[in-house]
Image (cartoon, helix red, strand yellow):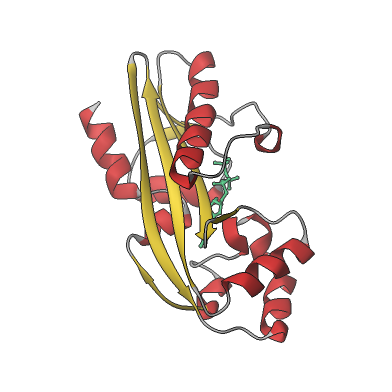
Length: 184
Ligand SMILES: Cc1cn([C@H]2C[C@H](O)[C@@H](COP(=O)(O)OP(=O)(O)OP(=O)(O)O)O2)c(=O)[nH]c1=O
């Protein structure tokens, strides 16, 4: 059985639409309580994805477990989910008019097998006014998204363009995930 170790509705939907049959088991640890080094964002998302997957594998040892983590990286600063609306405003103000990276780390674990990889895409934000930012935050959409926006939602109107894999930005690099599932 394949298990998605994630509470993210986006990851669930992406995997469902790809025709994979799986169940969801949420990892049993608080992301906020883990203090990992963020100076290397690829290493950071890989470690978090690994922690999510290994926590679930421990209790489901006959299964294949997928864990993932997504962050936004702007000029060496890692932006995660905002803690409140003020934090979302701060992030969106920083992202305004600039290019940033979105990095998703994935860990696919099964007894004796560990596949961990990252995927990077770039997003170019339009210049945003404070009013546009405030209006967007009022939609509540930013509150559970890395970097405080959703490219697949209302947030699309904040974006000039993106380079790379859209699924990586939404939280799961599907092509690589499907390829890895085939080979393990
Ligand atoms: C940048 C961006 C992020 N996101 C989402 C993907 C992730 O769900 C979320 C980043 O938070 P994560 O901590 O990666 O994931 P999560 O807390 O939603 O789920 P779990 O830890 O249980 O797997 O941001 C979008 O949906 N659209 C976007 O454009």
